[in-house]
Length: 372
Image (cartoon, rainbow, N blue to C red; front, top):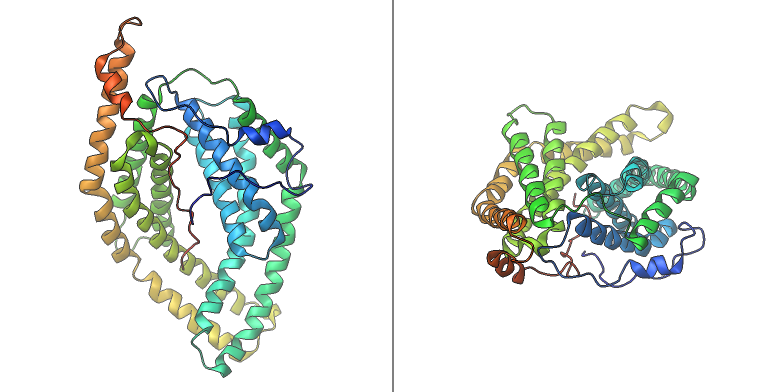
């Protein structure tokens, strides 16, 4: 599912902080085209406004709880806000940088509720092809998970209503509406290529450290690095052009496939913990079915290395080389522009700037549901 490009609908009372209507309208105002004067701060604020619009669109549905996808999309918005605040911490005002600490707390509350949604969805898929008698054995587990989901969602709503979360959202909204003063004027054409190249090096290093007996946490680290590279590439896709689009396709597949392994690993551990808890009160037939489900998760996890190797080859080959060449061109153009006299703009920079896409044409972020 892609990020909606239209303006969000009105949020219900109490869903967000008390910010001025003009601030909400500012989230979707047209952006200026990319050119040699565009700063990294401009890119960061454009991304932040877009993500806040996504938050406002999905928060009401996440609170309601009728569609698990709404919570998933809200969590994705928060995760990307966290990534944006981290990626541009040297170009953003201090209040926004400090807000990142609360972003992580928001993510934890959303993640706890989302995890139960994922486990329930997996149980439903697993039981779809089972005989009726075995589906009946799964019913006590489903009831238990539904109860856990109710409790997790209640905690999540309390966290969304809490004073720290409301202040966090107010801070973000005010900064987005006012386009708060930047820290310096670092050109996007100089900063964005460096951000992407640094994240690729970190991902490559994490992949090279993997061994046949590496833990699932080691693979999860690779997934986090892939996600960071993806976010940085998507954020600058309007500047990078087709090479970025070509790399993002296998990068998304790498992240999704490693995510499926991570979900299986976490589900396997939760099933083991639940089976070993005498207080759960689950009948023997249900425990037996849980054991079979755990075995299926274990088989999925055993294939993680093969999955990674196959996906990584498609990321680090010709697609990355093409994007790396584009990043080098942008870096060279930025350097030439910074050295040109103020009254004599560099001709090469003018040519390069003519090919740049507008910030307003934000990269299409495929916020698809978690695959299991």
